[in-house]
Amino acid sequence: MTKETVPSALGIILGLALIASAQAQGPDPSGVWESGIGSLSLMLAGDKLAFSYTSVFGPAAHICEGTGIARLSADGSYVYKDEQGSVIFLVTEDEIRLQPGEGIIGFCGANWPGDVFRREKFKPAGICKVKTDKAHFSAVGPMPPAPGKAYVIAGDVVEIVSLHETLAKDWVLARYKGAKATTLGGLRRTELDCENH
Image 1 (cartoon, rainbow, N blue to C red):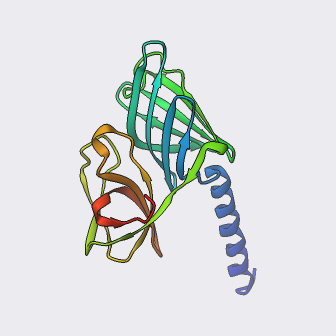
Image 2 (cartoon, rainbow, N blue to C red):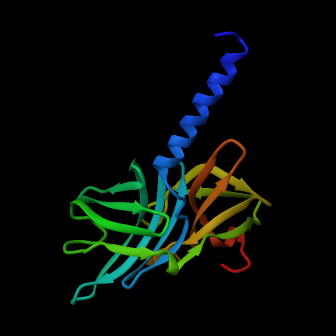
């Protein structure tokens, strides 16, 4: 190989790796999805799928309510695990399937049947501007959230979806796409200027 062909070969290899990574990750499902029994907010950043889910299921009207981060495990498949069990998020262009994994998922309890969300009941993520001097992202998980080190500043544009947990009314799930990296986490609604959210 000559010096001239090395960058080209390297470029081809890197390009193929990026295409393979995008195919493994699948489509970006970020937004709010509705089903017959529940509501699901999703925000994707790299191999992390942040979610906030609420539903009522079964004849006794069991409540299922949880927030967390599922991690990419296979083509279009993300897994969230807690100390009791796991839930699998199967993502395609037209639908999201939540299905029980191993054990019993803590925030839903026993007999949760899973859930299916279709594209016709999908709403894309909203767009907001940061209005405070500095807004720190919080960890994605049970409320109240733990503060993080990453932050955005006044004028930065973020994508947001609602959090569904009862204690989360003052918070949104947010994503900031920077020049070098994408940051994901919770932000306070009061720190943002959102026209329709």
